[in-house]
Image (cartoon, rainbow, N blue to C red; front, side, top):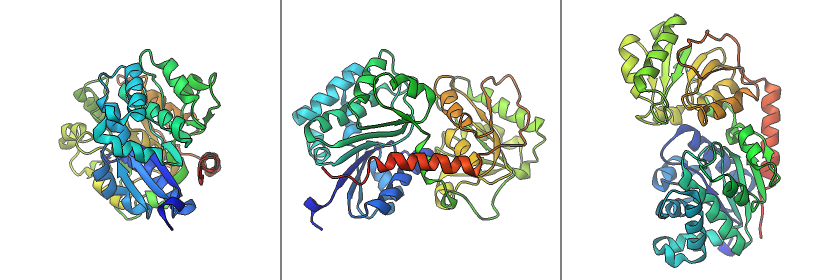
Length: 380
């Protein structure tokens, strides 16, 4: 099949850092496109295309990676969202403003579909990333490409940026979000579906570890984006595990972002001799060490999701009230059965029940499939 006969699908995500959830979301869409469009050219625009190629390149026979729209976000003269928007749109229309990425901009103009995949990376935590939406809108205005955003978390909105986010969203053909505040942000200005995180689309045995290297109690705690200190979080984790009377040889810690998820572990490891650390590289190779009946303590969002999906109970810890509480609440609202803790001065009771019902998971996957069917396959 010649290049002119192949569809070109252009995905935008935040893969390659690496971060467990971001990699798994991108993997979900690449697997889906392998099923429905194996002959299409698939480009994934991401911050770290080299590592992303190594991690994900095998999942679609024609997957390739670039960082064009991300470069435009970083090249903008400030992180004020209106200025980022203006720069990104002008650069797409006049590649001479960003000549180092002119070829990448030309590639984006050939796309049949421009799709910003799920995650919580276009919001007030990273205001420059508004340029991803702006760049897509500007490309599609000239090329006629179909535009989609799926499973996105837009809350908290950038300061003074709510109107801009709404305006950009009106230019999309498919708008799908994963949490209630994001839906409320857009509902009066565009047709928005509020489904769930994109990873619900790809839940299955391939995500989970199946050998005997599982622990009854699991912890995933981060040191980035905290509104509390790392020592305070370490104290909370230690006191909680002590209150639950957790035997160290039945305790595991999992890493979703290398190094970032080891700082608390380094502080508490000596208190729990025999504890097992699961590095991200091992998780990506062998699956998440999650199983029914486990008890989890997690600040991270995707261990909450994949743990509850397989029948684990747990406590989700919000370490950032606007960002992480919104993320975790999107899962509890769907019926994860996990406890949400927002005050580290309160030691939570050990949960004994939790996890999504099979019927709920089937419903969420079906909803996501309906969204996907509105996007692919498509040719201009």
